[in-house]
Amino acid sequence: MERSVREATSLELLRTALGDCDRCKLCSGRTNIVFGVGNPDADLMFIGEGPGADEDAQGVPFVGKAGRLLTDIITKGIGIPRDEVYIANVVKCRPPNNRDPEPDEILACQPFLHRQVAIIRPRAIVTLGKFATQCLLETRTPISKLRGNWHDYRGVPLMPTFHPAYLLRNAREKRVVWEDIKQVMARIGLPVSASSGS
Image (cartoon, rainbow, N blue to C red; front, side):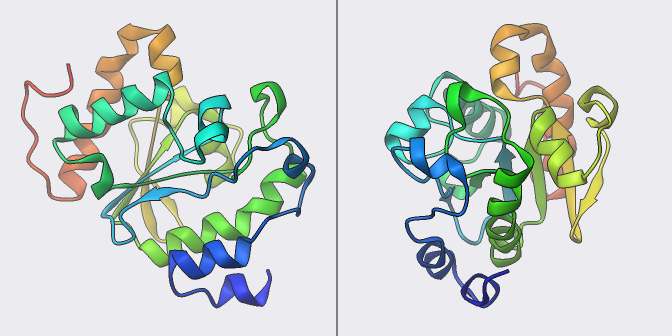
C-alpha cells in the first residue's frame, strides 16, 4: 500500500492520495471517480459493488433508482438523514456495461476502501449485494446464506443484505432486508419501530 494511503488521517487526505487514479484499466472509461459520500464520523457505513452510469456521471454513489431506494431505506426505514451515514463502493470507477469488477480492479481499490473504513470507524457496516459482501468477507458463499447474520470485517460488525437494485426486481425481498436493517439499528442503538421499513 502506498505510504500516502496508509498515513491518510482524514477522508480528504485519502481522496488526495487517490488523485486522478490510473491504478487499473477502469480509469480509461470513467467520467468521475466515485470516492464515497456522507458523514466522516458515521456510525453506519453502506458498501456497494461499484458505480453505475448515474454515479459515474455525478461522481456520487447510489444516485440512480437503486440509490433512491437506498435513500428510502435510510431515511424512512432507519429514520436518519442520508448524510448521517457514509456510502462507498468496492471499486471507485464504473466497470464497463456494469459488469462485475475484476480481481485486479478490486485489488487496486482495496487499500482505499480499507482506509475509508479505518478513518470512519463505523459501529456497523452494511454490504449491499452479493459482490460487495463476498469481496469484503473474502468468501464465495451465496448472499442468501450470509445475510441476516453478523460477520466481522477488520473488527467492525458487518451485516450483508440484498442490493437495492435486486429489490427493484424482487420487491417481495424488501421484508427480508428490513429484518437485516432492524438488526443493524439495534446494534448501533437506534430505536426500531414495527411500522418502519414497509
